Image (cartoon, rainbow, N blue to C red; front, side, top):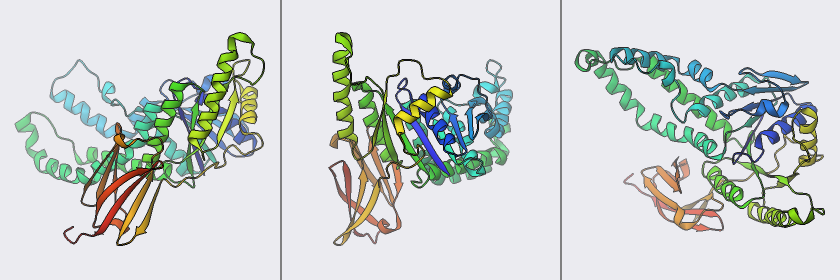
Length: 392
């Protein structure tokens, strides 16, 4: 099984590259499916055909799917929907329908990704390629399992116990029902699936992320930030693809400056993202739609290399012995000292970088040890731990 996630700023061409990778993978004999989790689906446009919520076979070894977030939510959120319906009826609320509460803001992509887990677990495909939503939504989605797993482990058992005690008296006293065990079990099952998703997506033997950029300053800056956050959450980026690069030929006076600027940005990208491989795709003279055009794009991008192979594996976190203590290192490329905040509570370490944070349950080696200090050195966050604290 191989899983490849394509992400990037909106409009950089990640959908076309995801589709092109799928076409080349299928041509190489791999049973391949490319799936869109972006609410604004354009995957079907890349193939110049209509796609559905279920996989559609396009050619030999190739399937494509545009997942309906509403249908996915109804399937996995049914018990919660039933509870919401009962709650609305108890409060005599008529101005809003239950369907409007099926998908909460920010959860659309989550339900889509859970559908992808099914593809991986059923084993029908060799390669699963995901055309993700633009960068911000993708980062929110990928950080979701880590955040919710913490809530499940820390808060949910207490909340479930309190609800069990309060449920018999809730309706006569509050005039509203509290969720039943089946509703809570649905939530637990969702969280379990989230844990499975996180395990799959952070498995560097299966999954990698590819960042698509255009040679423009704003796009590159966003790519740098997303690369940093992907490392924070332990996701392996195995390639950066620079799309719509003007060819190194006589472009005429109008495009000459653009060509020079783009090629200077290309060298900057190679330097900044090293040792991550950087692939290039030119700006084509026509739109890239249909199987033939997508196959051409893949051939130019990957050449003779298998598009589904791993181009790079990086170690995002490692532990080493230092005298009486240990050093925990996390790769955080493009991070600056002022961006990072650390806190520790027992055997849980919280790392906050900009607007994102990750709660890390310390591995066995570091259990019972206090973080004594940290420094950012050569794009690596180095956290120093002392000896075992017997008070823990």
